[in-house]
Image 1 (cartoon, rainbow over the protein chains, first blue to last red):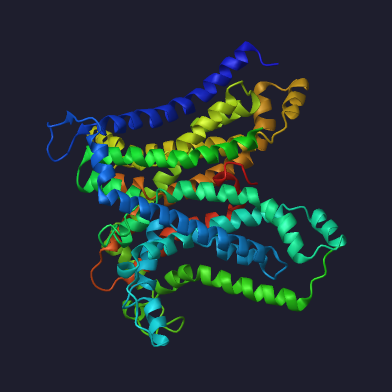
Image 2: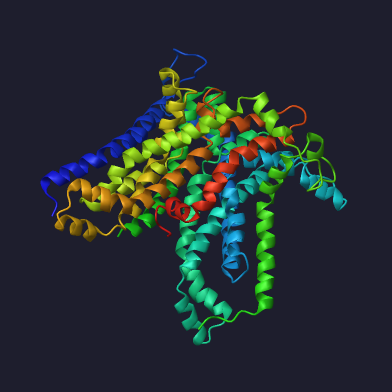
Length: 289
Length: 276
């Protein structure tokens, strides 16, 4: 039985974490919200004034916003399709009886640990570069014209780079889930004469449904905030072709110094992320019961 | 009854799996190989895979031309600092929530998780302005605090899921045997909690080492960790592939090795215990 003294101590132990996170979340978010109603540019200090929803009107009617929103959705959607689709297939393959499973696993998971600026620059220079990149050499090998990927297909190139980083994550989670699938159940199904396809659709796939959902939701949270990969490869260009919401807000704030407009953009990004977060929280909340 | 696997089938799957794994790993291998080439060999066409003049020159040049060691130490200070600070705050919290759950514990945990869902751009501007006014821009301590706050929910959650697996009866048994509080902590709790704390620490170091939003926006030179330093290679002059590769290889090697050792914990930490 917890005594009153113990309960008090317990609260005291939780308090620092709660207070820190409360400060981290509430204070800056309230400031962003406040700035979003102001005309506030760092280049003309002292001219700040309340302008109501004007920043939102400008931001939401800016073609850059719609381009960035579309790019954000394409980036998140594209990477999800590649990583979840590829991850399921790869996890199933590695889960087969093969020689050197441990080493295969280590090789596959490696890209996840590479820092974003390194992977983006390695891909940009050593693979996608139209003169010195390996892809250009491969193209010439088969007699094709080398493609300037980052200039012609900037968003698709970034999707490729980011998918390379996240495929290991999806594979690892799905593989872990597969390996927890009860082998007795599988054997029982086999005894009952279930074929490979029946086993897959009736046992494996339902078993993977939950981990797949978790992968989709967690990746979405991180993918909405892709930043470094864009910064070091295309700077969001050409034009706005590879600008996502995160990058747009960054460029409004720290390149154009438009604090008001960038804050309105930040709030829009928070709202979008929250829509995803609600679903994720429900999924994870169930594991607590 | 074990499933019978024909050798032919096993061989086919093995070749397929190794082929795909090799392709996925290739960019990393290629970076490491290129770091040992001369700049001319690095862009040779056709590419030179293994037969080139191996050289360590790039590693030396990277050190000479830039304060590489300083950036490396910044990375270590930021990753370790934010992790240890986070653990100091999170261990008591996770401990008390796991063993003295209150009515609101579940809500508190969920709320902590929700702070992790907030996109960084939502708070970029105030943090940047506050840092500017407080003189924290381009300082290690500033970045350490931000990364600690950013990862605190993951640390609390991960510790909580580990602590919850420690059976409470053991504590009671120790108490019945007349163990003092200090002995209880030292001989019973600590040994059982250490693996969880170590895993949490490992995962958090990896996350902090590779973090590339705040480090890029809040540091410029003095406190820049490797993420930000490597980014400076995005606008290069002249031949630089081999040097970029050498700088990259050194930046990823320690964390890659740590990562391989912490695969299982990674799954648990990044899914907030939803997949084990």
